[in-house]
Length: 92
Image (cartoon, rainbow, N blue to C red; front, side, top):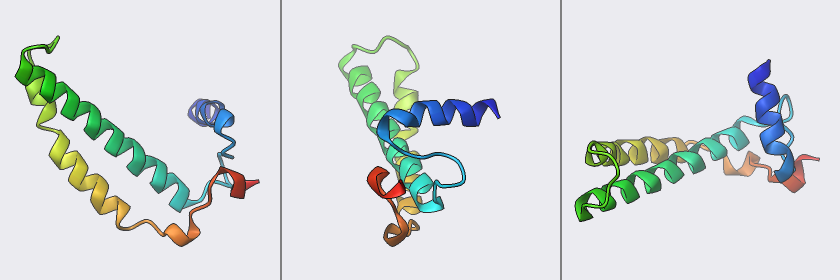
C-alpha cells in the first residue's frame, strides 16, 4: 500500500492517474522508457571508465549490463500495444 502511495505521489505532477486506471500498455511504456534511460546512464558510466574519469573501480562492469538491459527493453517495447497507450491527457 505504501508503494502505491509513493507511485501516485511521484506521478501526480505529470497528470498520470495511477491505480486501476493505469493500463498495462501505459505501465509497460514507462518501464521501457526507464529501462532505456538506465541503459544511457550505464553507457555514460562506461565512457567515463574508459576515459579514466570513473569514480568507482567497478564502473566498467556496470557498463557491461547496458547491452543485455537494452535487449530486454527492446523485447518488451515490441510487445506494447501502442494503440491502447493513453497519454496523461487521455487518462482523465
